[in-house]
Length: 203
Image 1 (tube, rainbow, N blue to C red):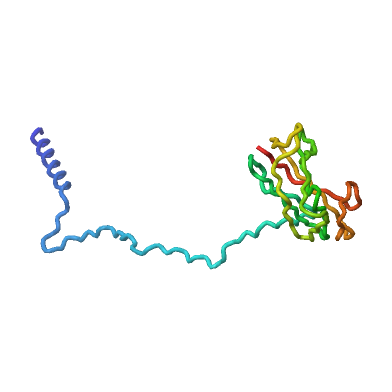
Image 2: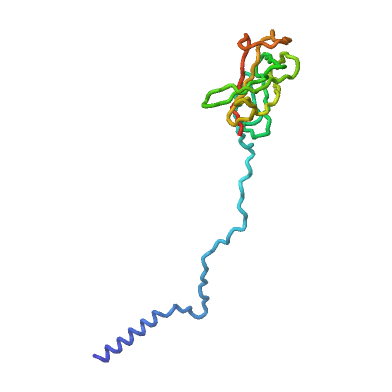
């Protein structure tokens, strides 16, 4: 019995060994061809960009300009002045009628100090005598440069430059009756009006 069992074990081992061998192609036959899986080569065609837009670029319309203000305006050429500079003054008539101002041996403008929010008249210590007294007109839409101010006022019995904030006041008259007049009138006359500049500083 032991011999028979041993023979059976050997026979089983041979059978298993035969199954483990790869299948053999019989003589005279062509072995089957193994085809590798197909691969797609990378594309060499450049990407197609979308054509440029034929629409014009969007344009933002400019903001609507505010209408010009009516009135008579007084401008200084700067907001701050140092020693040795002159204050240049321009008057613009943005009314629809002519204005007149007195020119000659009289003040073309008045200077006010701004102290604690209050305007105080600062005497210039002199009168600008530029010729015979007369009224000069500024037509609608026109501007005129006045005589420059040297920054000095009458202060403490002297005539000096005083640091601080200031405003200019321009006196003018409205009405055709002022045209051609040569006499200088006092304050409080009919047709009299005033225009003030913005604040500026002597530093």
